[in-house]
Image (cartoon, rainbow, N blue to C red; front, top):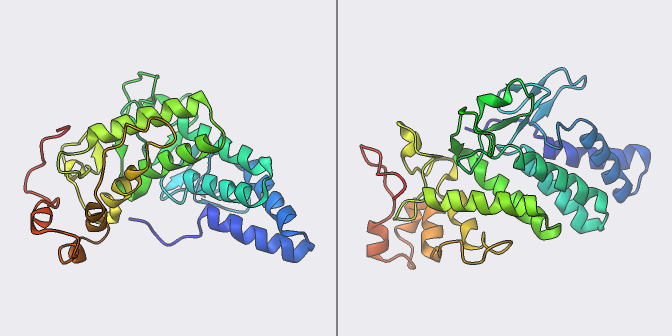
Length: 273
């Protein structure tokens, strides 16, 4: 579950306002000052949720080290999106460069299974604990859709690639989308984790929008790369995923659609259907 916190991207916004007020900077200069500070505390271009003023304490949802970044929002994808918004508002390529750096940090954290764990480790002595794409270490290789984790990483990669196309980004996007669609069940739902684990990770659940987050963006996911890769998702299915109770009463949801909405069963469904 997401907890109450002051996320990094919110701190970035506060820094923009504080910088402009204290130093009488223009909004653009305040944004640049805040972005420069954030880039100075980044790890390989990525970010955590929280930092103490002396940087001795770092954390995502749990404590982290100075060689780790967080994927789960409001981590690296959220900060990268803030940079992109600043670039779109100002046209200053320094913001775009920061967003590109965040995207490359995520590329290095993509798992062989196609998605992302909650964190990415950059310490060479510990990276082997995860089976990062192309590394073949035999480490942890479970991608998660919990808390908009893999989905937010893919969205940032696609948005950055649309702004600054690069083969490395396109490769990670194509690999991730292919894995995501492979993990999708025949009825359109997604497991919380893939490859499905031997627990609730194999179930499709409504908790934390695990169904909604990959379903709704998937209707336009293919645009940055291969337009034929994403499955068509009807409007009422997207509506149902966002609001399962009201969706059953939605005038756009037929009785046959309502009866086929994903429901958790007593045993995990057959994976990779």
